Amino acid sequence: MGDLNGNRNGAVIGVMAATQLITGSTYLIVKLGLREFSPFSLGCIRFLISAAVFAALLALRRHARFFARADWKHFLLLGLLGVPLNQGLFLYGMKYAPAAHGALLYASTPIMVLFLSVLLLGERPSLLRVAGIALGFAGVLLVLFDKGIAFARQTLGGDLLVLAAVATWALYTIYSKKLLRRYSPLEVTGFSLSLGALLFLPVGLPFMLRQDYGAVTRTGVFSVLYLAVMTSVVAYLVWGWALSKMDASKVAVISNLQPVVAAALAWIVFKEAVTLRFVIGTAVVLAGVVMTERG
Image 1: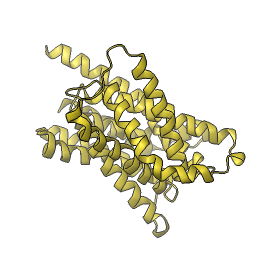
Image 2 (image 1 turned 90 degrees about the horizontal axis):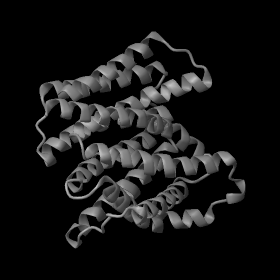
Image 3 (image 1 turned 60 degrees about the vertical axis):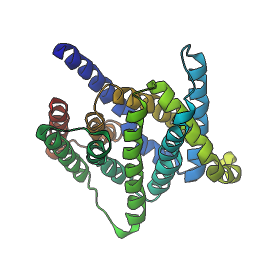
């Protein structure tokens, strides 16, 4: 049984690690999209597309079922946390915060998830897991400060909005974990994000109607489609699937690979130099992930 659990966890970690290629590039894609769309217009279009994709996936699945009436308020809360609150705060914050700030602040997700897992899910993490999460965050600090990250008064408002988005994502993760005990990852993710898109519509629709679509370039179209399909459908589904297999805090710590991926992409695309601090920071992040999984 131990070998089976170990193999299962190894497969989950491998898939989650591969998905960080998507989520790690999301911060850069968002910055590109916000050059041509307002934050609420971008968010509304993105989640309307992802809701349509989820509706198609649920319709194609034979054994998909609608949630029970007793769970209505839970899915509604999940939708509120996942779209209007999380993405509204994130997109508006990223308009004023640098991409590196967003990556750094989201690296605090495992810490928030660990605290909420103990408080709301009854998880009892070992000292090794706590140390692994702390070590992973330290590695993220090394990676991002190597890129010259610095906080300033001009970006403080955006940074605080992104931090609030992190808190709502941690809550979304915890409540997802509860519903995943009774529903499949596709059902939990599809229903919650579709409800979230409907809740976001009254806020985003006025901005959508005022959007100058004639000025939107291929880059803008690509950014919306990437965020809608790759991030909101593929990455969110993998996140829900991983939560159904492992403890929430173990899943969350893998997201610390996002800044490493973002920095690696900058190295590949923009030919930026690889420094010793970046290599050490990457090694520390990986060590933190391993320690958390072992814990």
